[in-house]
Image (cartoon, rainbow, N blue to C red; front, side):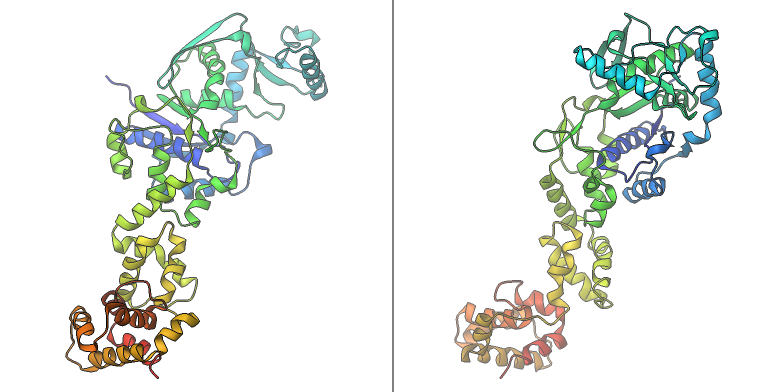
Length: 462
């Protein structure tokens, strides 16, 4: 029988959800859907010094807005302390861990001395072999793993293949802090075991912690999961993208006018690509196309221009009613009356080809809803005899009441007025749009309707 796929997204509540976290959550979500597995949300909140109030709510809200929904959870590590303590005692009893009483001052002196001697800075094992009667009874302590000397940890990673790391490069990592809370290393291993996690998809920064986790699995007699370490996210200059930079939060991107569809599409391609190098995917298409084996080893470059391109594509190609609904808050914020839904849809259909982000919509649309000003140059054009002739002629055609085709009127205009094209179109467009360059006249009349078109023209006739 094939093992049931159970995977998890396990963020720390230390701030807003950033795009690196979105990628990890997205890959986990996609893989769970693709394999009919279970996607679990676990909140790793054992580092109380970094806990940020409201982070969990923001995280869940951001995931939900992106359409990344979990099947189980959220589970909170802070509610599972008894389970971690149970296994810490087991590790100590089996000589796989020990209590360390070194103070912060001693640890700092140790690091300074090692740096001075050009040595790797790591815990030197001072408390490793303390016998029970020599242990301080009234001092605080942490618990450290007792990493074996000269052991080669070997494991397979779906992205990077077979990996070997010597224990010589590892220190006796703290697994239980003085405040009684476990560190990530212990808590994640214990939780992954009890939650039956089959695959761990996480950032590359955890790759060299994997031997420590393997040691814990081995020491506790448990089977480790399948490892999948995702490539780093890089700036365009190839430096590491900061996970905690506010500009890269999901909340910031959504409020700045990026669609969830473009964010999902963009993030999915930060470290994965299909065999045919296709670039535009819906979430459903990603679920059908994604494979762990096509995740790349090299760092993925975050290029905002590509996100802008994707966002503009989705604004042009998603259903008009859907885009219009997303745009509504930006009009309501400006107290614009968009109750005429027919006109509103025509406006959105007109301007969406010009948008990179949703929050640009009002600037491109306000000409259709507010009184605009025109330049002195355009005012001079409107006041010329030929322009006044055009405006009066066009007004008369609209007021004839036989509902003429605007396209037909515009075809007739040059011959009937004895004027060339620009001399006809420019004054009409200035009167209706505020500039001689812009939408064609039939589009403008369609958006305004005959009554409003007449009102706009009348105000410019001497």
